[in-house]
Image (cartoon, rainbow, N blue to C red; front, side):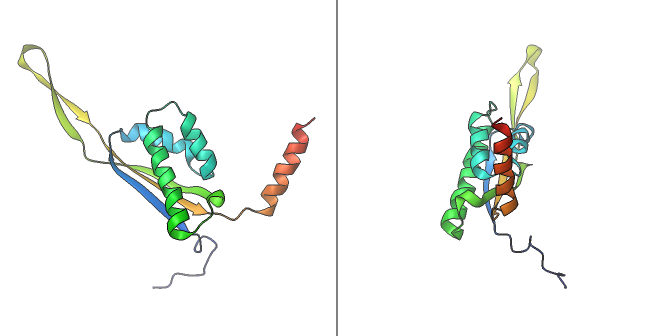
Length: 141
């Protein structure tokens, strides 16, 4: 089995955190996950803090756990972490019944989610620092 030439993505240190059986629907959680994908973790936590969706609280907890895992278990710097991958899988659905008129019963589906967030350490590039300085000068006018 030949893996081929090594690339920069191969030495990328990826740390994962997962929350299973979270009582939020996967569709609603995916809306929140889409807000933070590919953001630096500090910025992503701020976005989640002010997001009005109720799913932002469990997603923020998973992201904070991923950052803590990276710091404690892998000795990575929290300032260089970026949300590398984030996805929501569907968990088991709890079925409940609601009484209706004339002896009928309607099924209520209480959906659950498995939230997974992977963070990666990315070294700050020199070109990013230069572009921030040049954009700051342009906005001062």
